[in-house]
Length: 146
Image (tube, rainbow, N blue to C red; front, side, top):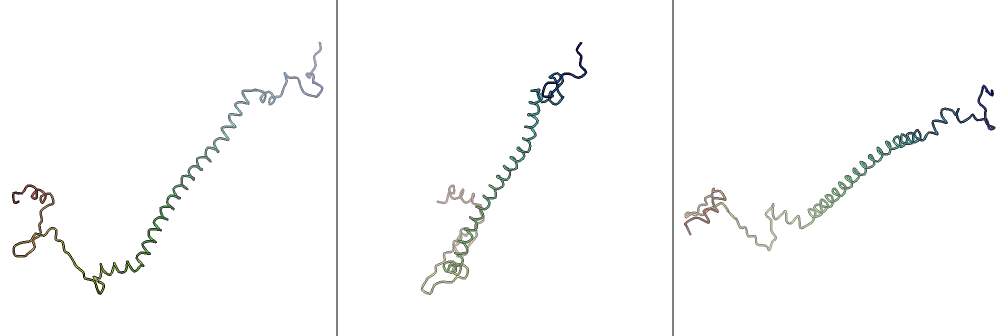
């Protein structure tokens, strides 16, 4: 009866395969390694997903800001053109003609007053026609006074 108190060891000092340590048995199990790999992938993917979504939000915000910059640059150009026009002699002359009723020395001004809602009378008085536009058209097309 060859029974030893301690199981026999190999020449390099390791124990028999039947008596492997818990960690050696655990890490040699393929299911455990697959589960461990899955857990590691999940733990790594959460920060990656969060970083990716933050990157997309920043890119969207940058695109909106670039669009706003382009819009404001166009508005600035239009306003600069308006400033240049209003500072020119042509603008000054046009404002003087319209607002101050000024004219050039050799110019003749003719004013045509259009009274669209006024009807002439026999005495030369002007009477304001208060009929609606629809009634005017009806009277124009269907009136017996031709």
